[in-house]
Amino acid sequence: MAIQTFTGTVLRKKHLTEDVILLSLGIPSDFSFQAGQFVNMRIENNGVVKYKPYSILSSPSQQGQLDLCIKMIESGFASEVFEQTKEGDTFEIKGPFGHFVFDANSPHNEHWFIAAGTGVAPFYSMLQEHLSQSRTKKFTLLFGVRSRENLFLHEEFLSLQKKYPHFTYIPTLSRDKWEGKQGRVQNHLPADLQNKTFYICGLKELVLETKELLLRKGVTSADIKFERYS
Ligand SMILES: Cc1cc2nc3c(=O)[nH]c(=O)nc-3n(C[C@H](O)[C@H](O)[C@H](O)COP(=O)(O)OP(=O)(O)OC[C@H]3O[C@@H](n4cnc5c(N)ncnc54)[C@H](O)[C@@H]3O)c2cc1C
Image 1 (cartoon, helix red, strand yellow):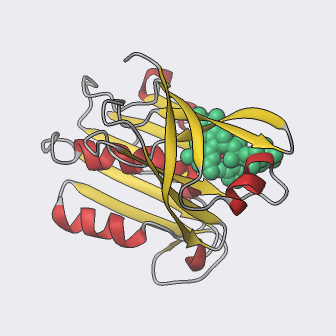
Image 2 (cartoon, rainbow, N blue to C red):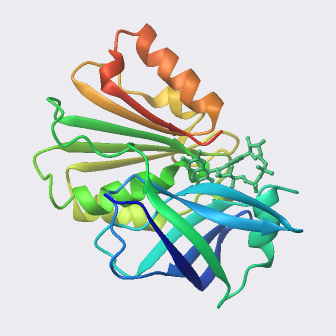
């Protein structure tokens, strides 16, 4: 897909949790991408310009609007700008970029998506896109956050699970006790790791540790796909 440069206009900014925002941007309707890809946003803070990558949360079938979910980092360069962002603000956006997309040609029937925090964004896009198209495949999302109040898109994933019996949603909390799974995502990998494709997205530690664990247990690198946020 050709890389485009266009203007995104903030249609809505909403807090999904205390420190994760959903940013909906109005964009040209001819912008196309594959679920799992990201865009680069031009961020100007105090006269300094940087391009920052953000995975696309929305599905490719939603035209004319791009949704992103962004973690607010204390004193972060872009986070400071997003804190102040309001409806009507504009950003220069370039994209789409990246190869972290669903492998429809995988020989395996089972696909495990493993994310922590906003690393879940590309999976939301992929699930919205592929659950209806790939009904003979099985999808599982392992989604880790610290505590119940950090869990976002929870209702959305629950309703996808209800609608699509070939999708299993496993949220896990690393710091809170609740009725669901506890501990880190790596603790909830399937017992049998063979004949599955694994997709991992999040910060460096999560990606490296999970990848290492899977390789150590005999999964081949061809069956591990990942996107690192740091
Ligand atoms: C391909 C790609 C896709 C990305 N997609 C997203 C996305 O969809 N949503 C998103 O929130 N971020 C995403 N990021 C990270 C994003 O580009 C920025 O690094 C992040 O927003 C911090 O920028 P900042 O300028 O506010 O902070 P900086 O001033 O650059 O501070 C960086 C610090 O923030 C930490 N950090 C970076 N990202 C995160 C995060 N998501 N959660 C917790 N700590 C973080 C870094 O480890 C580092 O310590 C992505 C990164 C890549 C490479």
